[in-house]
Image (cartoon, rainbow, N blue to C red; front, side, top):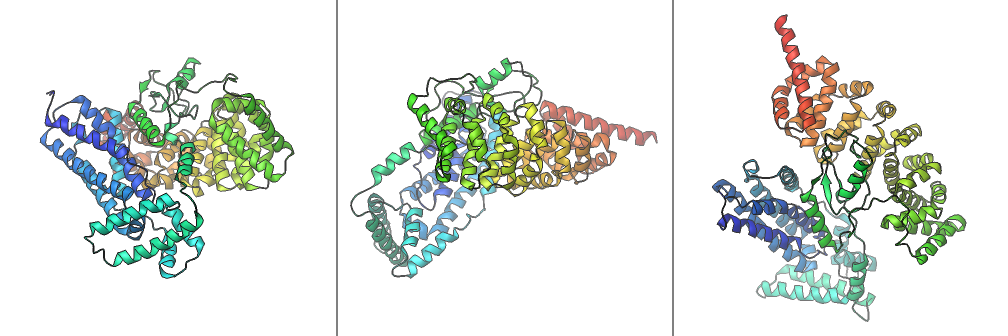
Length: 628
């Protein structure tokens, strides 16, 4: 039943407005910054659900309405808390940070409880919105009851600052930076917030007032001594205006690595910038650039959810969406490179070639930033002859210079022509050496560079032969979360080449992949499954996976995982069961038949095929038992 005006429509409009208001919440500049940012980010992701239901304008049942009413109440509480931490006293919130953290956790619990009351399966939602809301709900579920990790340095500094009459200026400096009380203007705002607290307490603030007043006076004296004349807030505003925010990886096109303006989904479920993937298809390619899976069709489906998230991010960070659709150009484009820019690049290259260590480090760092900025800079820097000089610096004994050099090459490699120039300059062995022996940042960016170069098929062979895979596996095991992602992406792409599958298995990749797969909270389940699925197509890979007790976790993913993960788990299981009847029996013991029947009806096309194949194997075993 479609209604024009009803309480349901009003409810959805109210939820949409609440999310918009929360999304526009000012940046939090105190010790609550992380908690504030996490809550705002998660709530923003609810927007597509409310927008779609508002557009559908369908009547909600009493059960559905109850969940959304609870959610509206929870969001109202969230708005109050977010306003409080942004506008309230920074000193008070620092001293009461455990109490504030409890409030954030209570809001998280309220939102999670409300989301649990909403029967998504009964709502008329698109598949992409359904998947997004399931992901958001999972985030709130994980965040619920997860305590904020203590900031040990802050606790030590606070204890000393409160205890000592004249604390070390270095401690007060750290505290003023941590609390964002660094200018005269900051102090004025804190004084007003301080005054509001006293008024709100009815003139009897209690014992905490003395602690606050004492700490605030010490910070105030320190800041005033460091800023004897004037308010620095205007300068800060200029710095904020010109600071470039880091674009989230999910918002970048996997082909161009630029911010997407018109994201579209292809048949494998991957998202690309429309102009980039269209160029790929127009060139006659029939595979997904990222996964190398054969495309079932070439239709492009707009990814409205991601597009709205990108728009929200741009609005929040003051970033303007690119005016021209796409950034995939392989021709030598020079129009936006001024003579001055070219002259500056020439000067930087002279420092690379002839400068001392400090000049080389500085020049490599500037080229790194220029190459990251846009397509035209990458072309210009490469044409000026920077690549061979940067390759030489990969062997620098200065860690920072080495980091700058490998990252500059990573940014330059986004251009297809530059990929060939980098390989021809003999960079692969040196990049592998950085991957083995560099700093963590250098290792991460070396892994990302190898992934970028491995897009070209012949480079997959050369990179594997240069010994990259064992070093990538080491990064996968001991790297930062970002390093693990970079390593996994590179390993996946390299393993498309059959010879590298054997190298990866011999290097011992299966055990760490199984550990990542079993660690649901580690954020690497998707990557582990994708790599295992591609290794399972190789005989040695099947044997190694079969020896790692994979059935329990594979069945868990098939039963409860997200669509793409269920598909990959089914593909792995199918490869194992085809050659090993023992794995088939184990799968049956873990409830394979019921889970696979459900997957054969509701999974992706590939998942349905794999599930059907395993079910046929199970039926074959039953037939043999019956005959005997």
